[in-house]
Image (cartoon, rainbow, N blue to C red; front, top):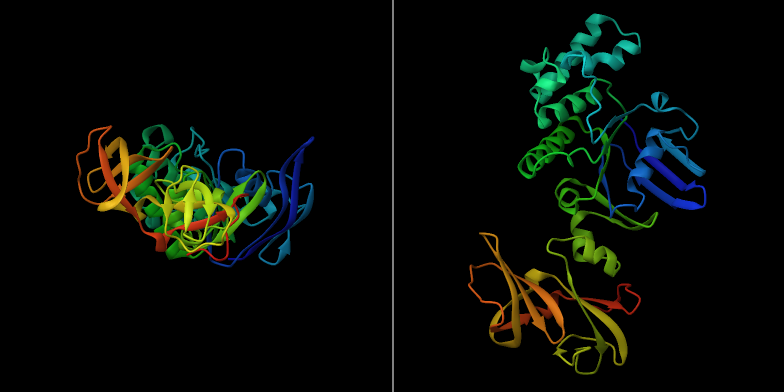
Length: 349
């Protein structure tokens, strides 16, 4: 096993700068997830760690060795791709053991390592099948098995679950997390799904436009996002934002609604509140119901406050028709304050 250190890495494609001075350390045995919208640079960063893309400048270190100029096969990494990348003419056992065979290991060594990985992943009954005879989840386990047999210093996952249906995605992310807890191999995992990031990661790296916006544990990012981008990206449903002005009385929205929040007088700001911090209150603010979305255990209610929509997450089942008026309250101890440029204010709740 080993750590990964990226130092001031840049990657350009012609005039386009895909990565801008990226610095990141992944500790030995850590599970780090790179997350962000499409085009943010997360897959490019993973591919530079793997050696599939050469960095324009900077350094990449794996397990104490600078690997920036080394080909993928010499970096002691194993990568699991989105499309599985299995050889269709080979059996499961042959797919899993192929890289070992190329390294010149004996048939006995290859068989022992394949059987060990198959036992870990529950693939023993499938070893003589071909990829076309497997389900999507089984193919993904084979791809993971092919990585395990190499006993690499680092596992790299590039959106491995995006081709699976919703139920199988949940099952497979549990299996990947359990696998990491068993093997404790350093892992860097790319996804655009913030729920995968929240449930799987030791730490999350949020990226946008080729730069790192924030690094932290899932709850650190959820509880103290550094800016409105991170605040809106982490959490489902997304955080609500209200533009307004901080006054002696509290935060006054652009529509004139006053919220009793400790604030600095006269400063333009953005107030963020998560949907679960909004609840029904007979003596609260009057709002119009826009949309009701029951999910079973809870209900998402979109309401109109002044001229802005808010999403409230109501724990009990409620029945509201669009257009009716209800009253809500906002837990002001749970709000987030950002300046007009979207940066977190130090004096918020």
